[in-house]
Length: 132
Length: 403
Image 1 (cartoon, one colour):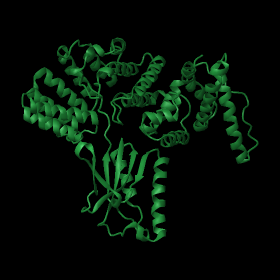
Image 2 (tube, helix red, strand yellow):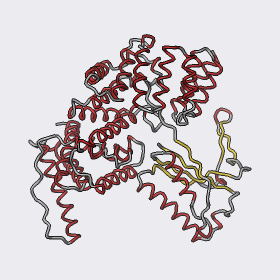
Image 3 (spheres, chains in turn purple, brown):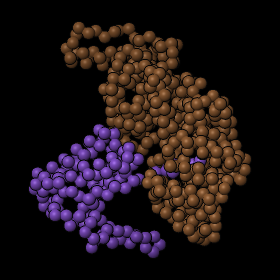
Image 4 (cartoon, chains in turn orange, cyan):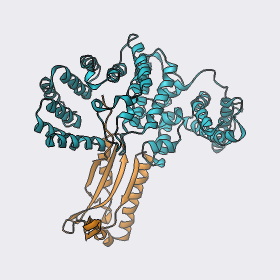
């Protein structure tokens, strides 16, 4: 079963924005992400992982008249939560997906303290079960 | 010989060559690597230079040479020169070792995903890239899955021989389960937006056919092969032009594969009286009843109800109870079947499953309770993890409300 783990960055979390961290803490954070992915590959569970550029760079697009794009800054300037990155993993069970999510949530912040970021666990849609 | 013919020949020979090495060396991972090297060598040389007179002997010799190289470098590393590897290639076996290999790859110590990957590679002769493509995961991930599975087998110290009579039935059940999972993955394509990836079902049928040839008297092996053929026969009719799901009752039956149906029916008919009757035979019989009905209206529901009753006695699977309720509705009416669902809904394993909502929706629709039916279809659509199924269920809800 494939699951997507959505890592939400939150401006409400105690940690300050990452660009204000001590460089060593930033490096530790990046190393953690690298090790997490390497471990998922080694376990035969990795499908994909991406980090997303900051919400300041995000645009919301709607089709306007004649399909021309209407662009607003966003996603939701007033909201305090944003998608920071995601993983797609292929695992045996939802329990295992939750276990991976918990491990990912331990990503270190300033001073190496785990950020405890909320990770949303969503099953990836697939095909239906056999009929009859 | 064409490239395609060479490829088919190599895939048939691969498990035999691997088995020959495994009879001599206990290192599954190294043996498998050596066989892959020999296959690659053959795939490049044979189309150009012609197939050797004894392809299997050729492959065993090349694989053995590669195996010796690996062992030598290991020996050198360990500085244990007193052990000299045997230079003679292992003899070409005079019997089919595919069965032993299948038992090994489907060992219960492995997780299903690992057993599937190893079986497709070592017995099916698919490349890691092909297996990764079929399961829509990166090749590096699949390579790790396979190498971990091989390591696990090596560590568990399972000998390369058939299981003992005492463990045979449980081990065969594990093999059949892995083959069934491969088939189902192909038939229903449990990942990705498209309904099916037929190559995996074709491969599962090929492997099960091979197993049936080795164990022709085993009724459950015959039952599984029949189940696959009878299900696969409906493959083309199961989806519309946009990949949308078409339920059994609405399928164009002229598109069902009659030769597969005939073969499946013959297999299950021959297997059932031999006994003991197992769940694969019963499921094959159920599919045979559907496949033999000229129209949906002519389906023999009393027969299906009886078969689901038998299947219910064999398994604690709530999905079987759900299908039993559908058959019950077709024989005794929707109202009585809805009572069965109320009982079923108390089962935590299925209480929030989309199939329970979908069946309830269907029964409510049969009973003429349109709004309640639409609401249940909507719930079912919200709970399914399948795109085509979600679309289908949403469409049903919309149709009822607009009609």
